[in-house]
Length: 68
Figure 1: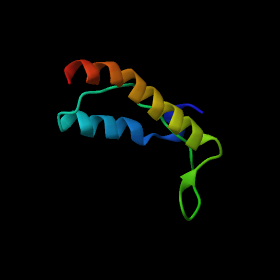
Figure 2: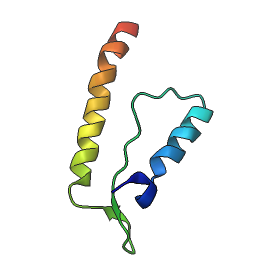
Figure 3: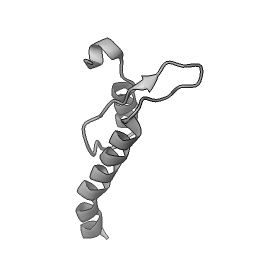
Figure 4: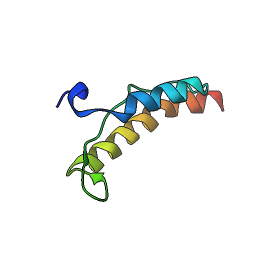
């Protein structure tokens, strides 16, 4: 589903972090959340989020080791 149709918190979070001085480590990614009484990730989204987090750590690990 296109971001413009579903909405995305990622863009707003990216802007807020940038305004606070954070450097962008990767492109923002959106995850689908069920619109129930208690919001929860849709099926398969937790695995996508975990894979994205692992990729971020792996991409930054060499840079972090070089500056240590």
